[in-house]
Image (cartoon, rainbow, N blue to C red; front, side, top):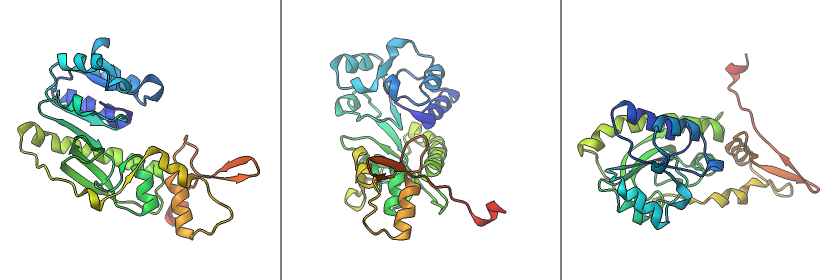
Length: 249
């Protein structure tokens, strides 16, 4: 179950080490990123490729069950994996999440790590009935730099997520991986719609300098629009470029 560059790279690596990919769950065509590359890497017939938006349908669950999957892997997959699907996978389902759980569960962890000032990182965890709440297998903090934007931090998190997955997979396959319960009350959670509450810059309120810079850079992620202010009926969007002094010499 995957999307984006990280989903593609994990799939390719699993094949390189001899794992059998028995089925594939993708976003609908209009929401796929690296969908063509993932499909080509998987080399599966159409009946083994499923639409993630239809995971709740009995026909989809029955078709997945018929494949007898042993273990599930989720990488930047944007749909909730329901207990009915998890019950079909004997060895459980692992998810690589681009956040240092329990911080930044849910959507846009790269942006909220900058906006909220919470730690950034990647976590490999087992999936349960909650959203990014399952037992942690391994995680690694990623350093946020003052020149990072949401886009640059996201790329760091993807690369570190791939590295963590590759290092941890042998422990999972051998049954030697640790499983540590999360302390959910100590963390943070955001829904997709939460960014709408911060994306409009109110020209009539005061912002601290750090607060405003962090907000704009966190939401700088071309080609997405990011933050804006209103000039009459028009929206004016902002993006930041940040450089260390030595990079400008």
